[in-house]
Structures are given as structure tokens and as C-alpha cells.
Image 1 (cartoon, each protein chain N blue to C red):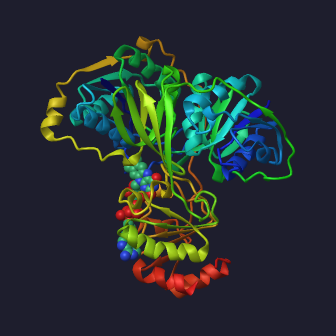
Image 2: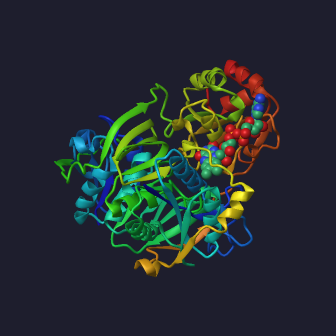
Image 3: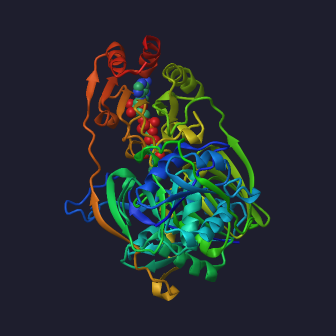
Length: 248
Length: 305
Ligand SMILES: Cc1cc2nc3c(=O)[nH]c(=O)nc-3n(C[C@H](O)[C@H](O)[C@H](O)COP(=O)(O)OP(=O)(O)OC[C@H]3O[C@@H](n4cnc5c(N)ncnc54)[C@H](O)[C@@H]3O)c2cc1C
């Protein structure tokens, strides 16, 4: 079985995003970019399934600018076997990404497509579910545990009320949550080796997908800023404050 | 334009998340219908709802997106928009509906600015985007803390059975390990007491956080670090990728205030922080801060309240 792992290049999670003064977006010039943290978890899970003998090949794919090659090299350095870059300078929305992934899945025939549950830039939380719909396959979203058993996969999902388990017939789409695993760091020798691993470059047109956006962002603004309040001396002062607010 | 709200499954009653979503739906201007998988009469009592569609087929009872998405998509000939709360159910099901309709979903809206224009937080709430859809139909998830709840009673909607293709066959619900608790629901509680990594382990968390929450009648939340370390279950996590809360009072105890945590609670009316580090970022958003060791301060606070 093959596992397809889509990865996205996004602002590093440690960087505080700054809104551009002209309201056109978030300033990404000279900002550290990394693999979306949920996608790292997806790569790690795919590698663990391969190491456990449940999968033969892990293929990483990214839809994005030429620089997304770096993100794919990170996936290769972690242990993915090969990579596909679908290069475009457009901002591609989840629906169009899902269409491109569907076309790639038709060629690659993966048993599982393992994606991050959301990207920490647009926070959309859509691509995996959309891909599952387009492929007419089942989905296990927000996974904290993934167990393959023959031709099905059992997925434990982090839901609002606790943990839910679903059983899906393969091929299936899985999206990862934070507690699925802790991704490995790529070692230096593996980073060197990754440079020689195959990386194909394609375009959305190669897959016949129109990436024209359906949503227009007309403005991006700063959220209302909270002012720091007051530091109280001791617990008594805190109690007095809370009581004056009608709490307890 | 008529709008459909996909109700959050909530046993035989109506979820607060659904009530907030009805308010968002009403802001689009047209009549509001609700699709419920149970409790049709309870949903028919929501003020402002014109009609309730009830799909009480076993295939829809467990929230499986594979079955629900074709049901909802199949109803959309009669609607211009479908909204669901941005709960784990809504987030699971609605993008699947959007793809079936070839529509780009607008996720997690916090306001309705026009018939096809909305605002939504991006970058963990560090920026607010105004987006306009050019799709013929709208598929939207709603950040429920950003909208007032519709009145749960006073309405008198008609009810009607709805049916769809049923069981798609490729997925099966196995079980839900639900965390049982008599506390208020985290996302709709008036007061939330949250603990972080500083609480050390599950016993210590329980020993220090629970009595304070009991005294205040509060819900309990946690940082990702506290959940990862197993102090509390996953559904306690507040943040960018956990639950979004906006209570009257949020008390953060031994939580540093990482942007991912702030994303889930910074719309709280009053934020109280107890942290021993005066430079902890949480104090930059707190209305009331106490620099203290929580192991002394929290028991004293619990006692004196
Ligand atoms: C993709 C991604 C998504 C994430 N999503 C979330 C999310 O949804 N929610 C979330 O919370 N985090 C999230 N995080 C994690 C986030 O970045 C932080 O790591 C996390 O919030 C830290 O938790 P904490 O504040 O409990 O721990 P720490 O940052 O370790 O802070 C502990 C605090 O306790 C204080 N302290 C220690 N001892 C005491 C004492 N005795 N008395 C008083 N104070 C004390 C310390 O001064 C410190 O400020 C995410 C991270 C990533 C990468």
C-alpha cells in the first residue's frame, strides 16, 4: 500500500503574524516558513505505518510556490520516498487543492491519503474532507490514533464530546490531530540523502484543474487589541475584584 | 433566499451551538430552516425558524459525514446557503457538502457583512479577513461565540421528514468514549477555569483546579501542554486547534499564553491570570493578573471566595 501525504508551506508556528498596513494580507516577506505542524504529524504517521510494514511507499505532495520544494525536502529528509511539487504562485484554495490531489490519487492509487486537519495560516480545516467527497471515499478526521487492519482502518477521532472511533474501508482519507504522534527531526545524513530523492515538478494545468479562487479577500485587518489590565498585589485583592464583578 | 442550518446533534434537546448558528443564518436575511437528525419538536420551538426538516434515519444518527453530506447536498436545490456551527461535527461534515456542491466553504465566520461577505479569523486569530464568495451557493461554518443565541422557545416552525441516500456503506461508527461530567459545557459556560503545564500531573490538576471550578460553578479547560501530558482529556483543550470559548470570566492558571492558546480565549469578557512568571505573555491580555505560585494562591483563592 502507498500513502500519499500532502504538505503545505506556511508561516512557522513560532512567528507572530503581522498584518500589512494596506490591509492586503499578512506580511510574509523575510518571515520564517516551515511545514504546517499538522502535516509533519501526517508525514510521521505515514512513516510509522511504513516502518510497521503496513505501507510500502510514502509519497509527499505539495501545491504551492517553487519554495515549497524546501517543505518537500523536509518530508523526504524525515523519510518519505519521493515527492511531487504542483507548482503555482497563485494562492490555491482548499477546493482546488482537493481537486489536484484527487487527480494525483487517481494516478498513484494510495491506500491512505494522510493530511493535516488544518493549516495554521488560513485555518480552513477543509481539504481532507473535500478530497474524501471528490474521491467518494470515507474520511477519518482529527485522528489521534490510526490502526490498519486488513482492508480497513480504525481511526480514533478527537471530537468535542471525547474520543470517537470509526472504521473505514480502504482507500480512506485521514486527517491528523495534535496527539497522533510526535514528529521526528530529520538527521543530518538524512537531510543529505533527501537531496537525491526524486522530486517531480508539475503544474495545476497538468491535472486539468482550474485554480481560480472562489473567495475574494477584500481586506485583512488586525483583531481588536486587548489592553493589559492590572496586576493585583495578593489573593485578597483578587477576591475583592472578583466579588466586585459579581463572581462568587 | 432561504437558508438551511444543519443542527448540532444534541440528544433530545437543542445545542447552544445551533442557537448561535440560527442567529448567523438569520443575518443573511431570508427565511431559516433547520435540518435536525433528532428532536424535531425542540428545534421547531427555536424563535425565528420557519421549518424543521427531520432526518431520523439510523444512517444519520452518529454524525458520519459520508452519510450526512449527500443528505444535505441533496436538499440544497431548495436553498441558497447552508450553515453549521464550527464544532467537530460541523467541521467534519460541511466541507464534504461544499465539495459535493463544487463550492468553496467559508470557515468559522465571526460576522455577516453582506449577502455574500463575511469576516473570519485567520492565522490563529492574529488577523481578521473579510471574504466575499462568488459561488452560486454558500456553505458556511460559524464561530458560535461570535453570535448571540437565538431564543430556544417561542417559535412554531412546521416539521417535515427529510430523507437522503442513507448509508453510504464505507464507514462505520464504532464507539464514542464520552467524558461524562455535570459541569457546564466548556464552550457555553459563563466561567471557565483553565490549567496549564504547571499543574504537573492529573492528580495535581484535579486537586487544585477542580475545587476552584466547583466553587465558581465553572467549566474546566486546559492548555495543549496539559492535555498532551495527559492531565485532562482532549476535549478540554482551548485554543486555535481546540475549543473556542468566550465566557464572562476566564481564569488561566499556570498557562503561559502562547498565541495558539490565546486564539481560543481572547474574546472572553474578563481574563484573570495566575502565573509565577511576571513576564508570561498571558499578562499582556489579562484584565486581572496575580503573580504568584499557584500552589499557594489557588487554594487560598478557593477558600476565600
Ligand atoms: C500546531 C499547533 C497548535 C497548537 N494548538 C494549541 C491549542 O489549541 N491550545 C493550546 O493551549 N496550545 C496549543 N499549542 C501549543 C502552544 O504553542 C503552547 O505550547 C501551549 O499552549 C503551552 O501550554 P502551557 O501554557 O500550559 O505551558 P507552558 O508554556 O510551559 O507554560 C507553563 C506556565 O506555567 C507557569 N508556571 C509554572 N509553575 C508555576 C507555578 N507553580 N505557579 C504559577 N505558574 C507556574 C510558567 O511560568 C509558564 O508560564 C499549539 C501548538 C502548535 C504547534
